Length: 325
Ligand SMILES: Cc1ncc(COP(=O)(O)O)c(C=O)c1O
View 1 (cartoon, rainbow, N blue to C red):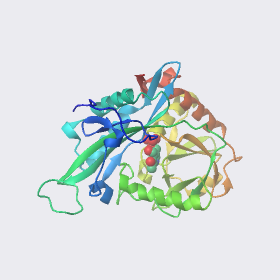
View 2: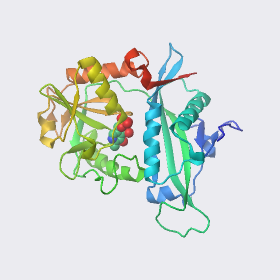
View 3: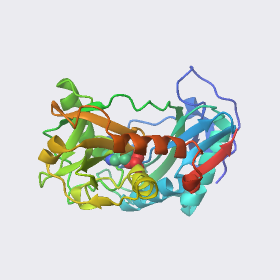
């Protein structure tokens, strides 16, 4: 698999970085084109990851957070949809390609990394239809500058009337592009009602997750989050929070099913995800969470996480892949 570029980036300025990885090559972003017959565009048969790199000016480094774990989850999602990674590339190869792409794009600022594997075209002789076999796989990685939002006063969430797609229909544990129509419907509904983000219940009626993040609550001193069987994506940031809680608070996270009404009576609620980081929730369905402001546990976890991902906490250094720019 080569990652050599042959031409300088061309085309209109874009907020995305100038170079992208596509099927073995690093090419100008403007040259990465797809036809309307792209299978994943028609049927949602793609999988993706969202990874963050945090720029540390004094260190002259971008710290990529849990790169290997993201590509392990990516490989599992790929296997689920029979997306065969070219040349049998594994998580380590994809991590290496990502580091090279970040060096090429040389963005000295916080960066979001989006790997995508998708069904592309029917192999010769394969008849038209919805299928996973007999369709080629493409893999791309692109990067976008993305700031890190301050924790702020917390967001207002609404519980959506759309239920999370159950594991028996489309597993949330695989990051399948088509499944995100479920999340988009939920966000659309609650934002029209004036909320910032949606919390989805599963078909059993217990809390699953938010649109792009996992849900935690603090009740009577206990840190609680729904288990994988609640139809959630097993978030990597969720795992980081468990590690921080153990190190910093000496507390274990309890994984158990959570009733909607517990969100109303929790002392603290917060969301965790690569994009949202650790985000306090100050209101659910128009009811204040605790005092309606970020609570002490959320604030402490968010502070430690912010330092950890910037390479400023030795205890969590093994999460990070440094990329010198
Ligand atoms: C539906 C959903 N749940 C949870 C998460 C949080 O996962 P992670 O912490 O691995 O980013 C995400 C973000 O990727 C997501 O899209």
